[in-house]
Length: 316
Length: 316
Image 1 (cartoon, rainbow over the protein chains, first blue to last red):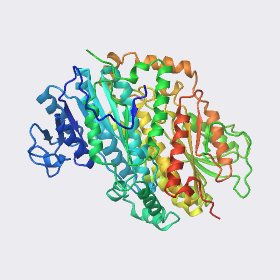
Image 2: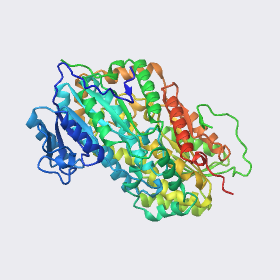
Image 3: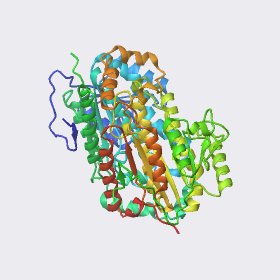
Image 4: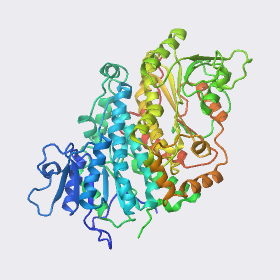
């Protein structure tokens, strides 16, 4: 089974023996996907923890940050002061969540920084910071939470990567694509290594087309180098790319759809969740790349006698 | 044209108007691929610069490090004291090379650290160091050298990535795969952004199968966490993977073949070099993944009106 889907069934699953209300931690709760994810998860009846660092402007329960209706009954979004950039802070947050619930069911790795500009104009320090936010944040959270998830023998990791790491290679997204490719490969590595511990993996791949990646993104700090690209033979590269992309994709993928799909996957029965879910207003080829990559991975693991780690072990 | 090859023609090209003897800098010259690359490039008549930091045990011309016959006439391998971990040091080295030659033709990004172990057992600091060696080294060297290559209006970047970033997802290679995926995506980003400056890109993808990645690699620093994987349900994961991989692939890809292929690509006419070259004693699926990824990239760039950046511009 390939476990790759591009469209999810709208029907909510009713898992037998699976806890209907889950304890979930979401990073990057203040970005568009994060807000809709928290909202949809909370509306589905789950208890959602977010960082106050993410959730600027939230009320006592991080509510405005998630965009959910504050008067809705049964909504359970909780803020904790933690910083995914600090190991000690993440460890303390996970300790608090486990102390309050005696468990942790789902992690949504969604913290990210988007950058746009000539790859050469990003200093090594800036790339290191980008990898820290987009990859090492997830590593810190995993290292804090996985001992608990492995002890439980059941859990779900959800990773939000990007299609630009898997095919949609638009100019000036190279640095961002690099960080997201690193995250994607880390997610796949974890998927195989955690399967026997009863931990499932779903990787969400939103399209990197859409104006959001260009308009609301960080820029390279070496502005002199960036100017050289703006003045040289690459002068109109960004303009052509942006107008071409705008014709392909007049809007960003709807964060609400991504959030709902994440909530749907959380509510699917253990062991049946897709390894990858693709989103995008337009096909940038990433789904085809991942389909081939998934076949290659499946075949290789079969050939070396590790077919079992393609799906999580059910530990009873 | 897909510009993906898995076998290169053995015939040496004689480019008209292309300099036959090139000035080349190679990082990671002390590792197996680095040694054979320096040797083959030097034997082909090129002037090769390596770092003394890489080239332990070399004589005044870095010779033993390259494994080339010291009495061969016309061999020109030169050592410079530079450290790809330091921006100032890399900048000084490139200044020296350009001062000595008034040009720099080819960069071979081959510095790397291989690591093997449960992804969870790598500390964030260790991953940051891994990204520094496997990705930021290339970024430092590019930022030092690309102003000169762009000024020349001609140049070649060669990147040595790994099949584990593109399909060959063996357990416990997740951290290494993550760093190599980051490097691969960065290389692709640069390829498109540098094409109009007359700079060509070839990405070499050696197979990650073969015992070298497991026997002679770094280990996670969190040994307590690593022990949990060695004692838990994943106890025999490494053993099964290693014996499975050993049956598929009884030896590493021959470094000599990689080195020769790099020398062949360097000697191909400008604009005709393959975007990707795959190596491996066995097919781990990476070539199929890259073929799909290359089609996706080609189609996307065509659709947004940037077909021209699929190949380097000939600047006369």
